[in-house]
Length: 82
Image (spheres, one colour):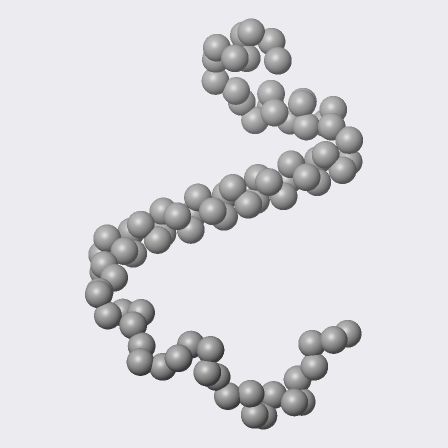
């Protein structure tokens, strides 16, 4: 990157010119990373807002049940193997 790009704001046109130079696989990889970053930043800000509005209570996740003691009956018809 040129020194002028490092010292000034980068525009979408600057990025576009660089993206066009990437191979197809690298463009796909970049797109996936950008979507993941956008999704995570949106989730994080939504979570912060939600928890600030209604904080978790002490007993919200407590239970008397054994978490590993679930009933396996009735699941025979579901087959995860493809």
